[in-house]
Image (tube, rainbow, N blue to C red; front, side):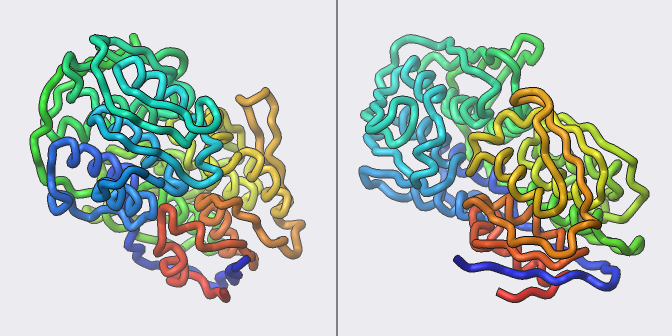
Length: 412
């Protein structure tokens, strides 16, 4: 297995980081643009992420099988897209992808008229899609506490349904900003929708998408690792400017601005992005990650290294991501002298640490998970660290190690 070793920074820094484009915005834009029968030339600044490149490839291919590799968003969005457009298609992916549940989405699509058969295990890929026959249903319910991507997938195809859709979200709603992002991008392409969040309902009449050019914003998830670099720098005059971020972002992970203030990083909008500077950190932090679960790994590592007691809730979806991220964090934080402890089953967690007592960090396993590699990389600002299988970053941020080299030296 390949590895990368990063070496500590011995001086302050003041650099500009050209962030990658958002794969969340890119993948939504690609599906919506396809539903509007638009050319890919209609979209600009699409993400370099493997997930997005996989989406581009599959939308262009006309074969009988769609292999999404390890791209969860692509699996969910294309299952809905292919189903409602009547495609006959086998949906499959990596072994880990075939362990990630999709039954909630499939049940909803079947209610609307999709013919979908599981080819192996009930509720999981691979699946065979055999067209769509509208059953007259325009009202469906779907759980909100498993994956917002199921809801977004249904919403994007809703305008094509003969009677439109009235969607009732049941239970607690996680990652709400991602659903709001979906609706905002649909609105950009001419779709009218009515959301009543107090009742958990969204109504979308039958209508047509209208072609509009769309430029993708830089990725706030990717920005979080640079916030970590600033937070962990021992030099008070360290700063970074992150390019391409909007002040009125649609991305839920823009919450990193608010999360990082108590951890010692101030965000100032520059007109072309955000300037990150150091400020005093608070003695402890409690945060609900329900709306931004992809930030949890980054924040856990920062808290561990800075020895700031951290209380986390809203991690329920982390166990069904690229890996069981809760378990992965528990294993790897130990190497930083820290612990992630489950205080209430599947709900409340605490991070405590003693990073100063660690003389040498054991190599960090990345579990085929891009966010594990990127969350732990900033530790090298203070101590040498080796990360296994560094190519996992290609899933969302292929230029990550190139950008890291702006701040840190390394050996592969």
